[in-house]
Length: 359
Image (cartoon, rainbow, N blue to C red; front, side, top):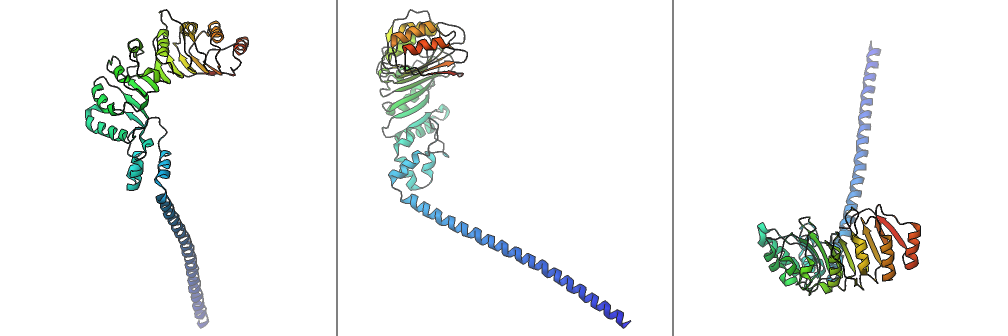
């Protein structure tokens, strides 16, 4: 009996020892995990400290940059859009909210404030006008590139807003409402204007009447780039006469019946034109009346059928250094026609095909 009892006691002790060893093993595993976790935390802390040190050095380095360098960097922060809006979370407005020094540099950098989309909210005129005026003041007589929605019931207010800056506007994307008689007179005050894009808010091709503008000459001779819808071939010729220094014209034509007077424009280098999808004689009629001795690029969309005879005669008369001819989808030029063109104009190297609309 005593022997049995002693055996049980030893078994019991062995069981307890095994349990303790098992618990110690688990404790060692936990301790190893804690040790590994500590090492990871220490490593993360070192990285954070290193990052903070680098950040402080970077901030210190940026802070030490001369205003001229900081101003140059700010220019690369601008959105890619051609016309900017006063959005608080985007440059240049964002740059004025970082710190006092950045604000001073941004406000003193005219190049940040030369592009603006002027979309005046007439239900809340004063704050909107104040914001636009504050923006434009910072341009400090630099040339301005503006997109403006001219609204028939707000021309007077817009004139007041833009009056101090009319001599600075070199590029204008103008959204015109139909039958807005005041708009042309504002155009004539833009004596520094070089680029003009005309868009109609009413989606009606009856835009500005260029015949009415022919006597308002302060603006037109300065233009070098125009993008506009024109009703008839005669208006294209009139626009070219109004703009003797034009180097680029993008337009949409509609057929007309008026007799055309021949005209030579000596500086137009890029002519992009589109016409209605239905067969018409817009381009042939224009080619018969127009000479472009400096033309380098011609893009013709929706011109069907292709007027080979008239185009060949146009090239022969103009003797231009044409390099690129871009045609709309559905228009093809035969190899023998191409050979005739290159025989007349050896500089013609590229004939491409496009599927999009120009206007």
